[in-house]
Length: 279
Image (cartoon, rainbow, N blue to C red; front, side, top):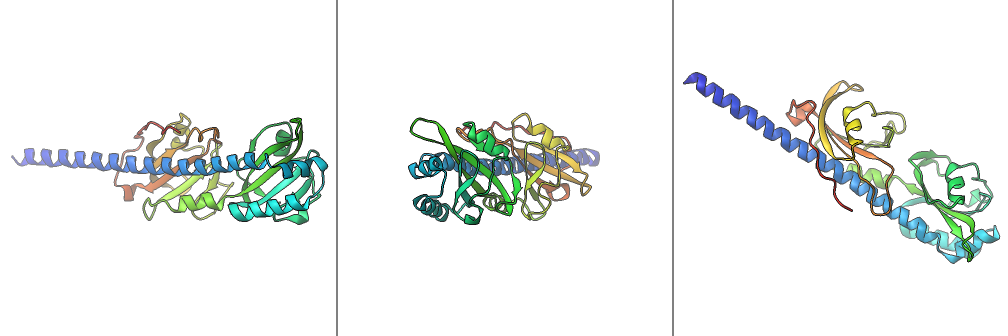
């Protein structure tokens, strides 16, 4: 009877462990998807913003004439004060010279012709860059750019915004995933582009993790693995989205990482795939 009792207890303990494991997997996976979904939704709104700005006649006329315009300058500053999500907004002529700025008016006359984003935009592309450190605004940013077209649909210039990525970092900070948990935002190459403390951006790379490789399937999921940087075993929820509506995304990934000791699971290699949400 004692042996049977031990077997029963062991079975119940194992079942309880599996329940805890499944609960942790679901929570971390849901948290990761929720965070990347909110991030991509925010970027989608900025994607729509720059397209709307490119339709403003004052901006088009300013670019077509190739010189600053008081009315265009005032409109830029008004947009900047209303939206509050941009470090700056620029108008450029077809040669790549800044002809008007919402904040850094001292940059008027500076050439951006050698920037890849400008070259692509001047050819008619809507541009969304990856996160980078911009000397122009002295901060981490994402550039959004749209071509300005005259009445004949000829490209006469470019309108470009510098997104304040702090709004994305605030999304990551708002996640409640446990006192010892880490939340990281990665670009498509696995480079760290966002976290809750702002440390190591564009320096640390997570592309070697199993979780990063699994997300390439386009699904949200969960895995337990050891992270070499601090030699700890983590339960990792990961997710990326296909973008949001017409914005196809940059292949960014969110990982929510909890130490195994906190998660109470030893399920290394367990993967839970969830159906991505529709947009």
